[in-house]
Amino acid sequence: MNDQKLRILFLCTGNSCRSQMAEGFCNALKGETIEADSAGIMAQGVNPHAATVMQEAGVDISGHTSKTVDQLDNGNFDYVITVCDHADESCPFFPGPVNRVHKGFDDPPILAASARSEEEILEIYRRVRDEIREYIQTLPESLSATSA
Image (cartoon, rainbow, N blue to C red; front, side):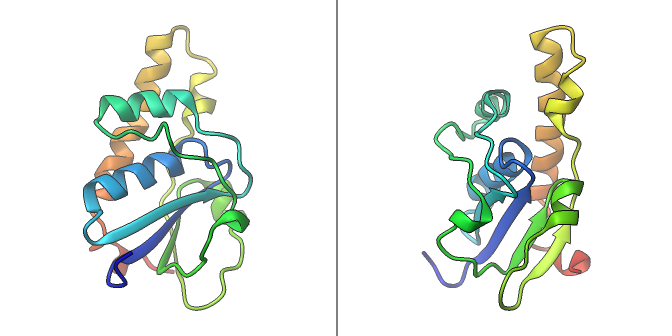
C-alpha cells in the first residue's frame, strides 16, 4: 500500500450493490491516487446483477466479498462516503479524523422489484452504475467541496 494514497470507504446498508460498484470503479479508475474499500451496516452478499453490469463496464467485482465495518482490517480512512440514505443515518463512529460525505444513489434492488423482465432489471442497474461511475470520475477533487 502506498501511504500517499487517499483512503476512501464507501458505506451502504448491505454492502451488496452501490458500495461494491463504487469500490470497483474507484480502484479501477483512480487506483493510482485512491485506495478504496467498501462495507455495510450489515453484510448481505454481492448482488449478482451488480456484478453483471459492472462486468459489462469492464470492472470485475465478482470476487468482492460483502463485509461490515467491523470486519475491516484498518479503520483509518480519510473519507467515509455513504451511498445510501440509511447508511448515512446509521453511519457508525470512526475513530480519528475522518471526513464524512453523503452521495446517495437509487437502490437498484428496490427499483427492480417491479420490473417485468431481466432486461428491465439490468437497465435499472446500468443507470445506477453509470451514475456511480460519473461520481467516481470527480474524485478526489469533488471531496473538498462536500466534506461534512
